[in-house]
Length: 371
Image (cartoon, rainbow, N blue to C red):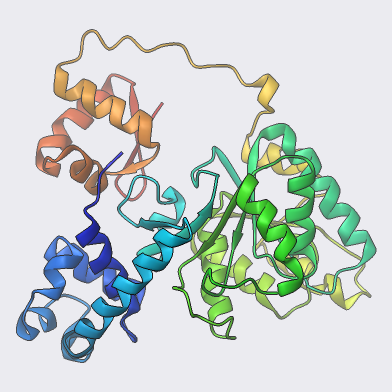
C-alpha cells in the first residue's frame, strides 16, 4: 500500500475545499505540479498557465488557499477523532472505477469496515416513492445477487435505496452508502440505525467535509459517485425525472452497464425504466441471473481459481510489474509508474513483453490488467 504523507493529505483536502475548483480542475493542477502541496507553493503566474485552469481558477486558488489549509487541518482532526478514513484519488484504496472518471472527486471520506474495491459492484437505485412490487423485486434481486459476492451501492435515501441497503445487511452482503453531506450527520435521520449497521458491514462514503448540509445541488454530485464506483447499475423503478435517471445517464457516460426492470406502461412510476430500455440506455432484466448473464459473472461456488503463473523466466523488474498489477487490479499506466516509483517510458517495453507473453492485457485508456 502506498504511504501518503499527512502533509500531502492535508493539502489535497484543502484543494478540494476551495470553492469553484471542481474535480477536473483539481486533477489538472495535481497532474501538472505533481502533488497538491506543490500547488499551494506555486505562484499565481504558474497556476494560470496550467492547461484547463486559466486566470480565473488560478485567482481562486491563490486567493483562498490559506483559508482552505486552515479548514483542512480542522477536518483532519475531525476525521481522526471519529475514525474516518481520508482516501485520496491516487491512493491504492481509492475505488478503481471512480478513479477512471474524469470528474471523480480527489478526496473521499470513508467510515466503515469494508474495502472499496470489491470484485463485483452493483448500484441499485430507484424512486423514493416505490411500489410494493418494486420493493419485493428489489429484495429478491439483492438477495439473489449474494450468490455472486458483490458489493451493493446506493444512496441511503427513502424508497429503493434503503430497501437495497437493508436487504444487503439482512443477507450479510457488503453495502456502500454514498452520501450527499458530511459525515457529522445522517440524512435522512430516519436511517441512522441502518447507517450504523452499514459502518459494521460496509461503508459510508462522501466527498463532502463535515459541516456540509444535504443541499439540493449535492445530490447530482453524489449520484456521479454512485455511478462511477459501479460495474453495473440497476434501476428498479423510476419516473421520467429524478436522481435515478441522472445516475443512469451518468452510467452511460462512464461506459457502465445499465439495467432496468420493466413495468406496466400505464404506470407513471415505471416510465423512466421503460424509457431507458426502449432508447437502448439500459438492458431489460427481470432477475439477478439476467444481470450476471450480461456481465459474464459466475456464482462464488462456481468460480474456478486461476492456475498459478510461472514467473521464473521474468527479470526482477518485469516480475515486480506483474505482481503490482495483480495486487492493484486494472491499473492506469501513470498510477503504475507512481506506485513503482519509475517512469512510463521504463514501463512500456516491459508491459509490451508481458502482454506478448500472455500474462497481462491492455485495456482502453492506457489501463493494464492480468489475463
